Length: 168
Figure 1 (cartoon, helix red, strand yellow):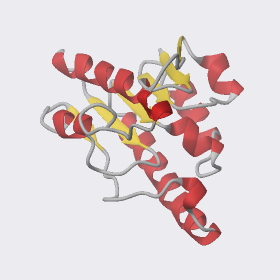
Figure 2: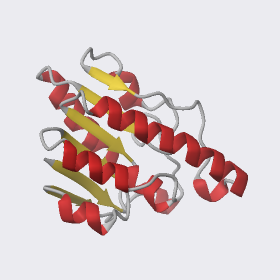
Figure 3: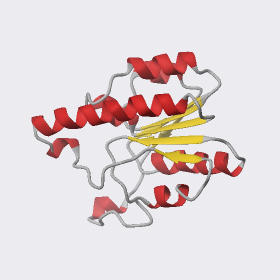
């Protein structure tokens, strides 16, 4: 089955990591790839302790795409595409593949959609979780679960910055 957690609000990654945790608790082999993110989140630290979870490597820091120069975007697109290839290869051996913020990488033009669609076609028995804003229609059409996170209220609107252990 294909799970799509999308929308403008907080909770997409949290939901994906919660499903990874649930699966790992039942001995399921899980691969987690996170796009356009850096090391250091609490969920990565917790999931790294579980023997059936494989976390694909991330850089120590990551700029937001809107802060990148064109040269940085091109370099990052190469790294993101390599991450996608690694994720799909590793995901073929997993029972659950999490592609966190894949939609952001697709929207930013950092990764191509075709290999993802090919993977979904070739691995119908792999549970796949995809997160991010503005998913392409082709992913929406294929998804078995679609959960849209809708912000009603958020402390950021009142100037509160992201907090360790809550937002990351």
